[in-house]
Length: 495
Image (cartoon, rainbow, N blue to C red; front, top):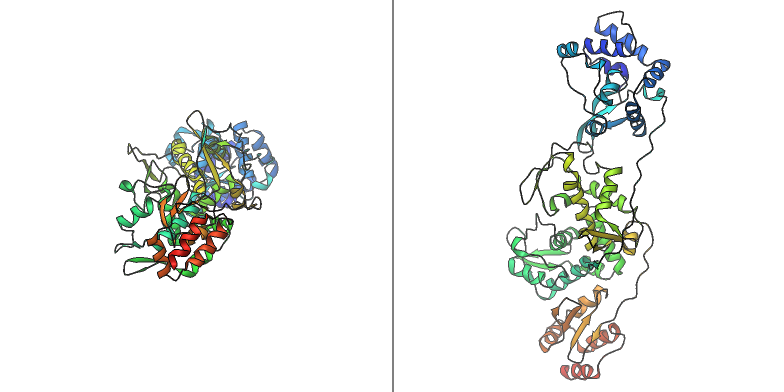
């Protein structure tokens, strides 16, 4: 931050005289440099600073306390929202209207007392304008820092219905099995062809509406799944056909469910190319300037980590708590006038802080009930008033570094005498992937259902998988509960 003298050098003489009048300093010269030197010496004198602060209104003193708490500077838009705009005057108009004698808000009161200044400083997203206390004034302010706002979030009642969580982990396994057994093809741009996409989509726990699906714009689970699979390097293309990258896929399948979830979570959390805002349903991003989706995601997740695992909260209440403590979490410069975001249905512009709930609030709701939910960090439910609720899961607490995850017991496959094999949710992905090599998929809800057929057994045999291996796998994965009829039939089939 600049010193007061460095700031005053940029001011016209009439503004120097105005500040001198407000601070009770009689300037001995009208030469700008001499006036600056005299004024800077007087205004940085600790007793003079103390007297100026004592003469300030409670609102102006509150602004100074807020500046002290922020290290001496606040982005100009955020300061204006809280304490008022600084009107712009040319020298002539300034002299005629003399606004320093009747400031209209706390910001002008501090400005004409020479207690704050304005300037630009770099942020990760570019230059931003700040309001700051000059560096040689800040240490002498006779005020304490303002208390930070509280993250005030009250639990809500249990929802009337709860949605299935952790679906992306299961769907990732489904995609790998589909590519391995059914095959998948892409076009010249590397996008899945319609037939392959439809075949995969019908197997997912959360199928998409393919008529309106766009992998580059949609924010649904299928779009995120395809994006993460590409980011993790699980697939390779050869003559327009997709194949598994054996080493990467094997390493993921052999992980524990917690390890698999952690890899998917980290791929989303640390991805700078997946922009949650522009994927948020109901919003259309036309231009958002330089953005850092990864940093935005990290800040949101840091607030999610304040929630108690297992406790239900209303999504709207969480958004209100974030607005209270960190309203500019995705706009560090505090500027709400430079982004062009529209309502996707009406086309109405959502520019300005007054649309915070419609933009930032919608983004928060999407992250909590979308990616964080699909990746297993949150459970989501519907409240009686038709609003959404969420709670942090035990897996979510582990993903956020709050606690170690206790692995739940793995369910067993259920083999029926009619050669159907039911795979409960939570079964190790590696077991389902292996099952898909010698069985045919039939359904994904309410549990995964496969059927062992002569055709699927023939396919397995062609891949070098004997019925002896199949039987050994089924005995282990089912906990030894195999119908004798199935054992006899498989043994006889190979003979």
